[in-house]
Amino acid sequence: MVAVFSFRRKVLAWATALFSLLILSACDVPLPGGGGPLINTNKAVPVALLVPKSSQAAGSIGRALENAAWLAVNDLGEVEIDLRVYDTFGTAAGTARAANQAIADGARIFVGPLFAENASQAGQIAASRNINVLAFSNNPAIAGGNVFILGNTFETTANRLVRFAAQRGRGDIFIVHADDPAEALGADAIRRAAQANGGRIVGSAAFPLSQQGVVNAIPGVTRQYRASGAQSIFMTSGNSGALPFLAELLPENGVTAENAQFIGLQRLDIPSSALSLKGLQGAWFATPSPGLLQQFNNRYAAAYGSTPPPVAALAYDGIAAIGALVARGDQGALTGRALTQSAGFAGVNGPFRLLPNGSNQRGLAVAQVQNNQVIVIDPAPRSFGGAGF
Image (cartoon, rainbow, N blue to C red; front, side):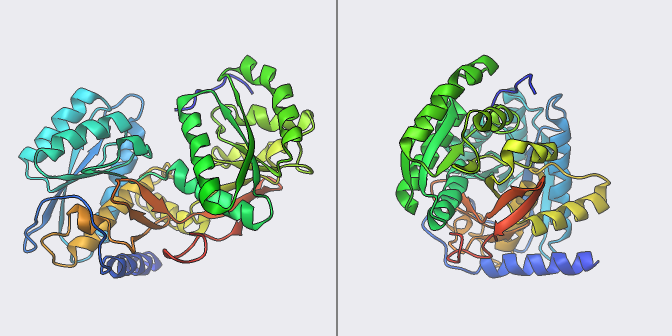
């Protein structure tokens, strides 16, 4: 996680339409994938939801994940899912207890847990019983075998943004990232995306992950950027880390919207107060389809009286995808082969598909910060194989 700096029923019709899309997607021929249990299609399918409900740090997120999962179950119509919720407490020991209890209770697939290290542990326990895991993590390092991640990855975001930049004549890219493992992974994703999508990395600069480290690095970063001939400056930091500082100091040192297209690997609109940062005006970032996201947020708020955190949508997607596969009446609906079917699923944030290597691809829009607002400048694709992929 990036360190925090001290500085500065239409509803019913919607649900029916979404589930229909999921069912249609699930009819596609699956790609080669891993194992998984057979299910009894004449009985409700036991599904284990592993969430940190009692975690002091993430309890509210755990409860939101559970809420979203129940929302999905209620939208499945005649498909019978026996959803059972297990509290991981956000710890390794709690995850082990939850995973073992879920197996003892007959679970045929896990949805969750939240944290990468816990998902890896749950995957190891579930593997002994040939059970697949749909984790809420976005860390590809834990993916593979019986563990599939639902979270949007740096790889997907980088591919989307680099492809768009190249199409707009902004494909000569300079990368700025913190000297931090997570941001180094982000920088590597941008490099791979450039190779695959017609971009060109013309330079990069790293800075120590501290306030003084950023301040000291800015003069050198600006000199290197000007010398590189880059058209875009791609930043891996988020608003909870160094991005607000970069957005202020880079323009003050001559790297402005006039000579650089600012691009953010992380969401620039979280928190929404960041949209007022002067240095981010005109910047690009990737985001789920705002219209679909708002529909989900509205439905969640109507049901539970609050706006969900972004990660809650992953719980809905995981349950809805399982429901779509189970609806086929196939005993192998929860095997890796079925989970990785090539057309993917119509998630609440747009299309997504699970890959045989345990990672995923998601359909994202390209947005720009304009006058303190988010404006979509290239819509999210509606299916795989269309524009945007």
